[in-house]
Image 1 (cartoon, helix red, strand yellow):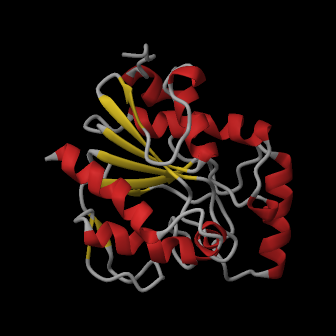
Image 2 (tube, helix red, strand yellow):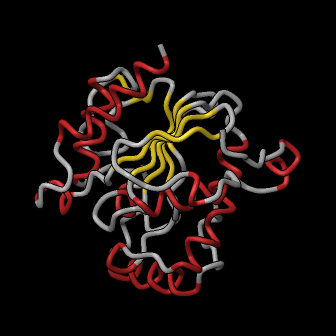
Length: 223
C-alpha cells in the first residue's frame, strides 16, 4: 500500500476550505474575474464553493469552474454540458436526488456525495497554470481534511488527479493517472476518470458508458 500523509484536524481548522470572494492569491485569475464581472455583472464571478455534505463518503474533484457553468451559476458543474452528464450519472447511481435543471435553485441535493474543484476560480480558456493549481491545493487539502467519513474520491481528469495525489502526500509513480484506475490512499480509494467535458465526449475520449462504469464501481465498493 502506498504511503500517505495524513492531513491533520489541526491543519484543517487553521486552513480555510474556500477562498474569499475577492481572493487575490492568483493575480491572473483575479484579473480575469474582474474583467468578467464588468462584462457579466449578474453572474456569480467568484470562487465556487464545494457542494454537498462534508460528512459524505464520496468526494468528486473536478478541474475548475466553467465560464458558462459554475462561474455563471455559482454551483459546481451547473449550467454546462459537463454538469448534464455528471448529475444525470449521480442521479442514476443514487448519489443525488431531485431533478437537475442546470440552475442552483433547482432543488437537486447530493446523497453521501460532495463536489469540489482543483481550482476554485474560472481560468482563461479553462486552463489553470501550474502555479495556480499549486496555490489552490491548500483549499482542496483543507476540504478533504474536514470530511471525516470520506473513503472514495473520484478524480475527473489528470489535473484533478495530480493535485489530489499531491495533497494526500502520495508519490506520482505510485498512482499514475488512467481512466478507470483505482488507487489506494490509506483508508481511501481514488477513482480516475477522464473529465466529463463536451470536448472529451464529442471526440469519443469519454463515452457515457465509460463514465457510468466509474460510478458503478464506486457504488459497488461502498456496498
